[in-house]
Image 1 (cartoon, helix red, strand yellow):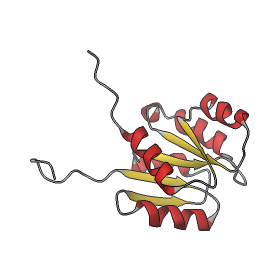
Image 2 (cartoon, one colour):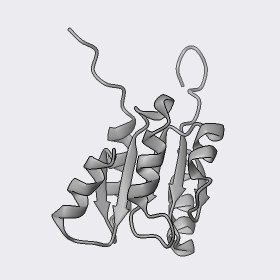
Image 3 (tube, rainbow, N blue to C red):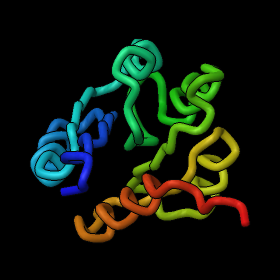
Length: 133
């Protein structure tokens, strides 16, 4: 606990069409973060604007609007340009990583992933950038 009181909990938004993955991630992350999970949809950018998450975990392969399109829509909101986006995918090819970066993603983790690896990746993305010297 800091001298100014407890730190506010960071907000995470999980976007994945697989209900098992959403349930697993919610259970694994809720002790440290406020977690909201949604299956997909065109309302994700509006939900982000309303909820203002600190990080988005975004599945790439979803029916309808895929993760790349959603990432591009999120990045189109100028106030969300710095929002960390961590892509999740079952694909094991490097093109997915580069496509994610091209559309505005910050990092990629491949499914199945180890929860400690996912948590450390989230922590790294949520760290404030180093201050200039």
